Image (cartoon, rainbow, N blue to C red; front, side, top):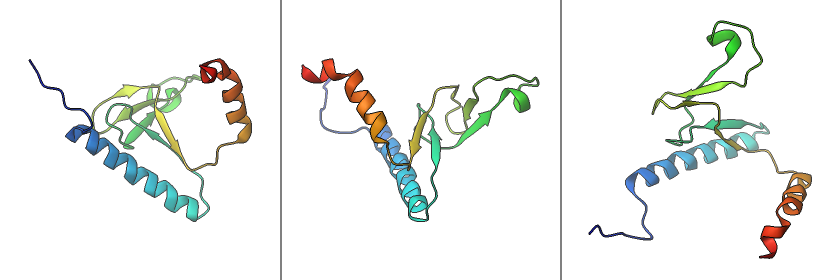
Length: 107
């Protein structure tokens, strides 16, 4: 029977948190300089070292596809990424989310 430990992070999770903290600190430095940025993050290893692949340049034909991403660290390939940003959230977006999920918030 395997023992389960709660309340502790695994070494992999600690490494992922360290990467995310470094990205957040970089975004904070850019914000202090007045630069807004959106950084795509690999959903598997939480690293920012992604190569953007577009249909026009990388796949050899013209098209209006969403770009795909390839992670240089873990080899992940896909179109859905996590995006970290230092842009302020707009109140309209938050109000729409509250309205859309109001049923869940009441429970």
